Length: 101
Image (tube, rainbow, N blue to C red):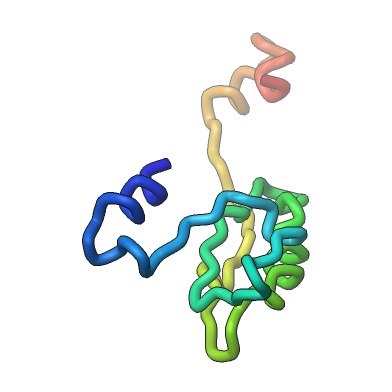
């Protein structure tokens, strides 16, 4: 909604920027038009990434030669988490379910 509003209201964007909210795997540009820039918010969650790589690859046909995709790369990773109070309670037996919450 915010980008669509800006595309209508901003004189620099008006007539130059088209904001399309659609499934990019199945959307076809009007008259076969292709995009200079494809912006995706499909970064997903840990584990399945909501098919993000497949979606971005499947939308490559929508880009003009030399077009760009944002993000063009990303990486999922795990980081250690410390919960010393929960670990202490689970270890000493005072709260056996401390690590299950």
